[in-house]
Image (tube, rainbow, N blue to C red; front, side, top):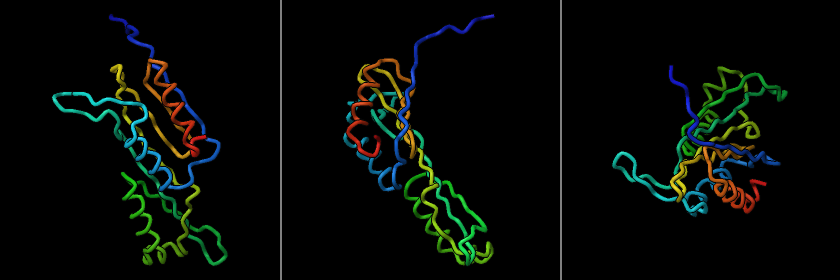
Length: 167
């Protein structure tokens, strides 16, 4: 039987944020600016005959939480809705909040529970040295994964130090 042979020393690192990222707009702004500015100096590459952007969203989802409260502000029902992007997140949360039939069926008044919303966005990055690595954001953490060259961690950490929400 053949053995598995180690082919590299892929690493991961995590930064736990002191405070959760405040809201979806702040989260989206961090991601959008990172992609637009490309501070890691990621380079485009060719895969299967197609040019791939050096830094791009690989996966993302956003979960909105809505509570339904009775007249005494007691929670009598909840709705969580997972959306594939920021636009859908805002739209679906708004639709649930405005749905009087749903509120009537649950028997309460909808209230956004933004403190418990969840955000997730993973960026796929291609380093100039040829490595592909990932930077994943949630409201409470930033994870760097699948890198080998320590200078990649240094670049990500240096950039994150300049973003106050990522302290």
